[in-house]
Amino acid sequence: MEMNSTAENDPVFNPISDDRVVINVSGMIFETRKNTLSCFPQTLLGNEEKRRQFYVAELDEYFFNRNRAAFEAILYYYQSRGRLKRPVDVPMCIFKREIEFFQLGDDVLSDIRMKEGYITLHTENREYPKNKLQRMIWELFDQPDTSTLASFLAIFSVVIILLAIVLSILETVPSIKPKKITSGNTTNFTTAEISTGIRSTWFLSELAFNAWFTFEYLVRLITCPNKFQFFTSLLNFIDLAAIAPFYIMLLLDSSKTTSVSVLRILRIVRVFRIFKLSRYSKSLQIIGYCVLESVRELGLLILCLFFSVVVSASLLYYIELGSTNTDFISVPATFWFSLQTITTIGYGDMVPHDPFAKLVSAACAIFGAVTLALPVLTFVSNFNTLYYKNVMEVKEENHIEKRETSETSEIEIESLLSTNEERREEK
Picture 1 (spheres, rainbow, N blue to C red):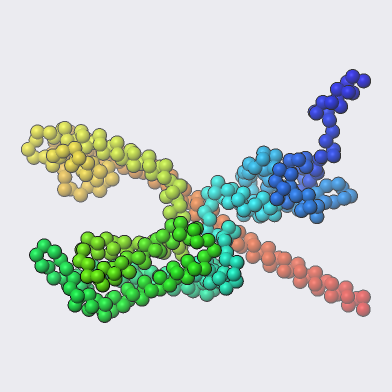
Picture 2: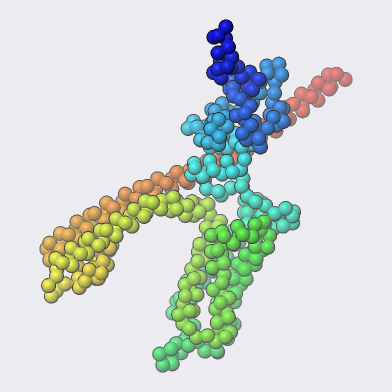
């Protein structure tokens, strides 16, 4: 009797049949507790009303025709209070579908994608305007993959960007550059030259290109669903940086401002136009993301180069100290020679003359070649991984979705034909 009372009071022997939940996933039985699932009431398993549609009363269990290995990770998500890890043998496209089916949430999906090294380039987490017309315009100018017309506008924008870049390059040709008049120590653009430039073909082309860039930027700004996210986006900042110099130069010309340094800076900023191409290229975005992923390796490389430059420059300076025929007049001046030697460039504007200094230079060049090669391997590995996950797997996933859609349509057609045949037999 004492043993029975002890067993009843012991939580290990206490039955939990009232709180037990039996889940059948494609023939594999999983058992857990309702309290475990109720930790996330917004999900499919955590909400009793949502999972009731999968309940089989005859077997007193919930049946899901889903992936078994993926469900083990999802069940552990409930048991660990929010820890989710993709099984090695489950592809990301399948695991993503399981997360969406069991309604774990967009935050969980974005977190697991970030951990797996995926970039947010696709449509699953996009925010859209609520107004239909506003959404249509937003997709037309910001989402090239939503329609044929949007793809055409994206191609047109790429062509305009390329033409604008070619124009900015051709403007540096001496025969095309505007003539200048030098008076004293200051170089000024005359009013006649400004008016001539306004009427010139080059200026009209520049005006047309910037008009399109401005129109595109303003349309996306007006129709975007989240203004704060729009202004904090790096790509939108690049668009603004590519447009602003043209209008600033117009204001300077109209006010007859003659600051040559300001004009040069504005012309340099126009180079940012080339970065606008990254908006329409996933591969370019992957390269940028790969650089961010390799910041630690690149930082280690810069640190090694800094140490190598300081040590080698100091050695070379003190080796040739006192020599009349030396290019190493100081340690900071020798930094330039050490840097180009480590990077294996070797301009030849500075050379060592002492035999021991030449030996140090050779060692510096060999060490630099090895140092530069190590982070390159890591960078290439990161790029291959990111490119496969964000480009190749997406193509495979789209292929699978198209195949499943076609199979579903074939099944529907077959069921419809069989139904019609049964009706004919009944008649």
